[in-house]
Amino acid sequence: MDGDIGPEGRDGTCAPPPHNTAVEAALLGAILTNNRVFSQVADFLEPEHFFEPVHAWLFTLLGEWIDAGRKTSPLSLKHLADSETLCKPVGGSRYLYEMATTVVSVVDGRDYGETIHGLWCDRCALNIYEAASQHLSGAEAFTQTAAQRIEATIEQLSLLVETDGGDTGAKPFGQIVEATLLEIDRDRAGETPVGVATGFTDVDSIITALMPGDLTLIGARPGMGKTAFAGNVAMHAAARGEAVYFASLEMRDRQLARRHLGNAANIATHQLTGRRALDLTQCDIDVLQAVVRRSQELPLWIDDRAGLTVAAIGARARRLQRKSGLRLVVIDYLQLVRASVEAQRMGNRNDEVSDISNGLKNLAKRLDVPVLALSQLSRRVEERSDKRPMLYDLRDSGSLEQDADNVLFLYREQYYLEREKDDEGSPAAWGRVQERLATVRDSAEIIVAKQRQGPTGTALLHWNGELQRFGDIAIRGVG
Image 1 (cartoon, rainbow, N blue to C red):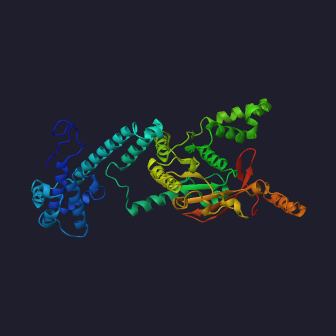
Image 2: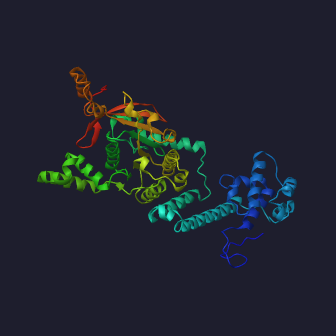
Image 3: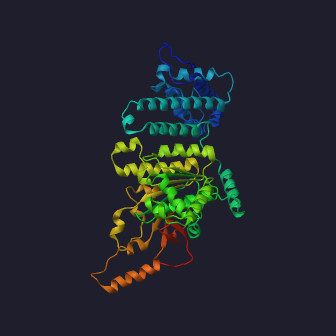
């Protein structure tokens, strides 16, 4: 049984993948000798972690028998080993006896199992490295930038690190409910909440907060203000000292900054653009400079790189999490996230969006932070008399509704009323439009259409179009 893991193979020409077949055989021999050893590794070791296929087969067989309450030994497994194709080259049942008899004493199975698992991680890391090397000269070299290839590799390595250490992430239920009760006590005491509040009283009264591990979609048709809403939520969180990573795939970072400056200084955004800035007074400039000074310490990071993949977003968010902590990830918007190469090869937009939404949900769970992603809606909304969005209006894929923990829709009736025309010049019809417009002017609805852990409902917000700002509203029952 060869245990070499040196840099060269037996022929001295090629380095074999990291492995130690002697340790694999020793662990299997210990289990054959004392079935209780299996319980020391069953919580983290899998058949694919073994280098030798015959060892993977035997570990699977031992697990099945032991789980069924059957005792395993070289004698009880003799007929299976002699008939198994993988076992024949190593001597069939004789190999089982050899493994069992060479065990001097029952080993610490967990130490052996962690060695096997660690070498598997090393092999995976080498495979990732080799794949990255091939991408430099393969098709991906022309379809992805160097930064995209590097970030995808970093994400793969980060996922591998998360599986290292022999921990599957499964916890005893008693431990989970105890930790949950501590969270509840912390919320009752008014300490730092578990989730991230949106900062809008009526919205938070329905959803409570954006919770760690949850994917929340904000769906809206163009012109509703979904980027402004996401920016307001991000700014509210940052103002409370909560670190936010904002992936802006549509707008440049300075466009977002200009919106923030106008919002905080109560200056219309369009007045900060182009030649209109000539009309700013010295008082305006003084206020803007004060806003800049206050903004210096905000824990908000804007990433305006176009064409980011979920892997790239994950890699950047994870680096930020390690460096500065992380409480919220915002993505504007989901349909502009680039699908993985594998999904793109499918050639189907539904498959691409499904790949993206599933990736974002997994990202939220891995980072253990809320992910707030904006989403476009289908044009079918415009064909209805009541243009309030519904779940089936989510664009491109039914998996969006399935993957999302929460789905919120942003709707402003004023937007549509202002675009209505006279009904063949009827003053009465136009009068009704004007009357309705006066009722809903400067208001917006946040429709909570799905909430996995809570109720649905509608919250009413104030909308200031000039400042691109949403806020709480005192009026109730409007619309």
